[in-house]
Image (cartoon, rainbow, N blue to C red; front, side):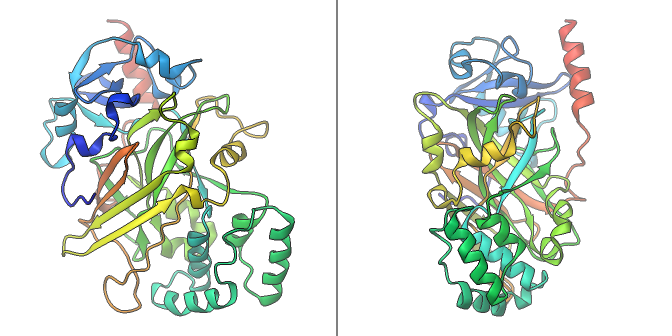
Length: 391
């Protein structure tokens, strides 16, 4: 599926939407966010069950509770049409990102293909023009012989010794095949944008790319209760200059997209479905440039549940739960502006990330200073919920 314009509701929903238990949030003008169950025709208020996405994920049997819940409804078609920022009626409700109070974390360097690209970024010191020659040199030494290496295993430690001796060991290889996964803070609670919104690039970046990922939804007990899609917008030049710039490379206004909805685990959709997910991505540029990409979770180096266990457990708690980006094997090398210059975004790009069981996450690209500023945080949410409880 390729999208260059705002996708239809049918394209946005999972192929088996009639059997999917989908959680969303909508903005109701004058009242604030509402937690909702999303169906193909009707979207249902879940306020009687939970006031926040974070609260909902704590329920003992959340999928069954949501499935059997009844409440006020809105037209899903009308909500989705009004989510398009280019033709929104600010007096009518629209969809938001489906998360709220959860911490937004991400696992990095979880696929061999993207791990090699991270090593190349580091060796090239963030200079896109040098990347092609560095890529060839790195692959000449390493090949793709890391694909079957289990992170943290004796085999991995032996390979580390060989690579150190060859002078190509890297901090990215350390988290790629070492015992400890890279888990970092992608963005702040309440800051994610949803499907249909603009995503933001730091205006100082000249080498960047989309990152199509699966996002696990994890409650405070460490139970993985569902999944969504995410775009972990990435600045290759900032991070390539120094890994200490990771925060600046990853956490900018509108730089985190999650959606279109959270699909809860139930008898129809489980962690095994996540493990075999194939994400496809279609990027269309305003000048006619087209790029297709994909990321297959079956190629991930660490199991999704292992990554979840490294993010939350005895050593780190998240009382409001968390969402965890699982990383991507997609690292674009297609030349856009000239031979050897590789890929980078331009303002006006559209990015559509699709998989049949989760639907389509669609965003347009702008710069972080031109995207709407993030002004609605936890304090504002608490105030709106308190007002609502008095009625």
